[in-house]
Length: 183
Length: 309
Image (cartoon, rainbow over all chains, first blue to last red; front, side, top):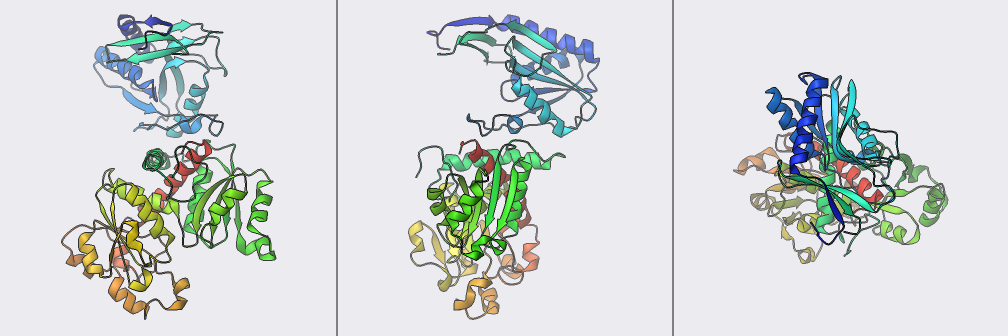
């Protein structure tokens, strides 16, 4: 991490671990044994959080839960409008028909990625419902009407040049930074 | 050579290895997508593509059209037999007329070598070469190399690829040579001397006129179609003689004590360059090539549309 930049630790490893545990308990509370549910991590930066939550759920429940990764690149609304988007693999080796889907990403910002992800998940079947879980919700920055069902922390970085970075060193070591754009 | 992003896909020559690798990586994702129940994405929904085929084609045209439609693009088709080209219109005029109807990309097949290059300098649109005369057929070479790579678990480097047949008139051969060499494969061409261009060794390929010897060397045999429509000049005495000397049949394969991967860009002249038994055998990936063609063309269109190749 570049120490010259304006930076602030939003969440440290201990706090992130607590949030992951809370997420797991909330999922069990709302989804029961999760036998009709699937945890889907969004490429590229939602995967680690999704894995951490899956592991926590499995630890508490003692039984497995359906897990997949989803790439939304082909469903973006800005292909051919500049920007570089290299697709990553989607790995969902089960039908999502009638399942309760929990989409997991690290940061919710404009909501456009989630809009694309909802399109992308439909190609694996028609889920009974879709929920959204994010570590950081950048409130007041939405460009489409999407809101999270579960969130770690909310921040308001309107009118600033700051952005959020979630850095995973390992599953137990993670830091969430608020960084100056110039860094 | 190019240093960064390219606007058109005119040929393999001029591409860099990392560009081919990013096409393959993207095509991997499209291959997965094509196996799912819903095969369509809206990625290019705001793009219009014109397929201009000034020469006959079935496989390539259908493959491009499917790729375009599965990416959600709007597609218009044009073939020269029913066009104003027959009435004396020039290529630039024809294309500019189509572009004035707000078309973003052109996929073109043309009998003149260099036609796509020429067009790219005179019209303001992205051009993809779907075969220009005896020059290049880049998407065929990409799908051939992609098929070899997938068969050998991701690696082409060091593999020995034999291209057999009419090398002289083949745009597939030339594009394949460039592409395979960029990816680190060794290439040998084999055929009667009349169908091998002079000085082809200068491209760094081996040359053989003996199929049995060449097959012993190879890991992969790509059997090119004998282009019956180009044989007026009599490059060999008879099809029967060609088939005896350069046709791949079971007897030849059985003499080799190894597995050989068999490819053909189609359409096949069964019993001429390849026997039915071999074309339909377990070592043949001819239909996988066709399947991969759609994913490769989707990858090329997708990357070019976002100016990311």
